[in-house]
Structure formats: structure tokens, C-alpha cells
Image 1 (tube, chains in turn brown, green):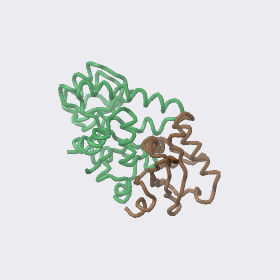
Image 2 (spheres, each protein chain N blue to C red; image 1 turned 45 degrees about the vertical axis):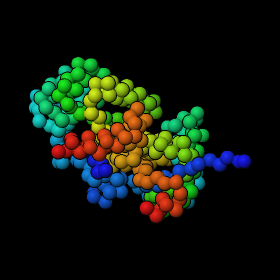
Image 3 (tube, one colour; image 1 turned 120 degrees about the vertical axis):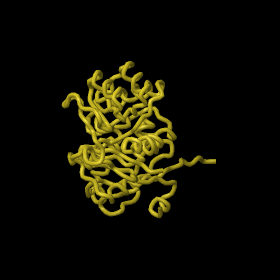
Image 4 (cartoon, chains in turn orange, red; image 1 turned 135 degrees about the horizontal axis):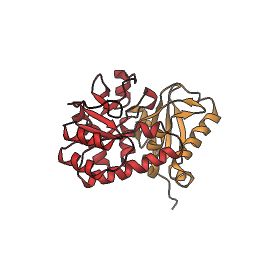
Amino acid sequence: MAVRDKHRYILVETSVSTALRTNKQLEYKLYSAMMGVLGSMNYHKVNPKIVRFSGDSAFALKVRHEGADSAMAALALIRSLDGKTMGFYTTKSSGTLQALFKK
Amino acid sequence: LDFYDVAAHECLVDPIMEKRLGFKRILIANSDIKIENIDQKIGKFGAAIAYGSDKKRLYEHARNGTKGLAILDSGIDLKLLGSMAENETILCIPMAPMTTARNYEVSRTIYRNTKLIEKAKKYKIKISLISMAPTSTYLCSSIQLIELGKMMGLDEKYARYSVSTVNGELWD
């Protein structure tokens, strides 16, 4: 029987509007910044991926269940993206994407 | 639980922002809560929180009834911790030195704070987690404060207690 990874979905709000929705490079820069904080050895435990956007200043980040705590702490330590100062606030966390936006 | 945070006096926060970040109230330094930088001012007591790196003066503040102390360089001074335990002074851990630092400085600050928290727990000192954000960009949500606390060695239950009850005690 195949074992599926458990995931958590984190709602992340940014302090300013970003072009994350349209600019794929910027999305990779966010992953890269997270890797900088978490370290290459721990990045795989989080494995973040943006799965949905809500406006220009909020998005849902899918992370592995075991790395959800680290992902939220890592986002607190990232204060700039592509040379632009901005804050990432994790406001909610849920087991399903539907519940994340429903709450 | 009602979560509270403390931010620097230049930080602009509105009620919508407070709610978004999961706080009942974000206290602004020197308008909602009196905070004193002991490295700059000499002699005055009566602030809710005193912060600085001069251990002698922090010790004096602990003895004179200051509610919370923030040790800026996260240095461990057993005499100071003993006095804080005796006077039931809260140890404030500001996140700003971590969120505003770059590269290896972040890691160094996390390590030093972890060691400080470890010692404070042994002395049974109450620990408070505050952002002390200089601007709104450097604010943390309540969830992030809890996660940063967990990263520095607190268990989830205590981290929640820290951001809610202990931070609330600073304001009362």
C-alpha cells in the first residue's frame, strides 16, 4: 500500500502587495529564502508550495505535516523578498484548503 | 485565549491589523505601555519593561519592581536571573533582534535566546514573547510568536501561555 504524505495548509498574508501571483521567479525566490532560513538539510521536511492566491497580499502555502511548525517560524524570519522589505504573517493553519478559506 | 504583543513606539498598528494577526491588543511602547532603554537613561524606575544590556542596571530594575526585563544581548547572568526569580520579574524575549538581523546573526541570536530561556526555566522565571517590532513590517502574528517560542525550547502550552497571560500581565 502506498503511503501518502500528510500536509498542512498555511494562510500567509504579506505586509504589502506582491507580484507572487504573476511572477513565477518571485515564487522561487520565496522558496529560496525559506531554504536559507531552514537550511538545505531541513527544507525537504517542509517542502513548501504555493497552491492558491487570495488577492495580491495573501496566499495558501502547502507544507508537509511534520514541517508545518518550522515553516511558520521560517516565514517570521523572512523580511525581504527580491530586495523589497516585506513581512510574511501566518494567520491560519488548517488540514484542508477548503477549511483554510472557510474559517 | 487573548493574545497580546508589544511593538516599538514608531510602529503604526490599527485595530484591523491587530485582529488579522490574531491579537486582542498590540501595545505600543510609551503610549500603551511604558518601556525604558536603560542603556540610554539613568536612574528612573517605574517602567513596565526595561531593556538593555547593562546587567547591573537590569539587576537594579529587577529589585525595584519593574514588571519585565529584556536582556538585549541575551547574556546569561545568574545573579540577575536569581533576582528576577526572587522578585517575580518577567523575562521578555523580543523577536526584533532576530527578525531585523541578517544571515548568521539570526542564528546566533536564536542560539543565545535558547540558552537564556533554558536557564530562565530552571529559575522558574516567567517568559514573555514579544515582537518589539520597529515597524509594522517586522510584526509577527500570534501563531508566529508561538512557533518562534517553540523553536527556542518552549513547549506549545507554555508558548501560548506566554503570548497570552504573561504578555497580558505586562499590560495590567
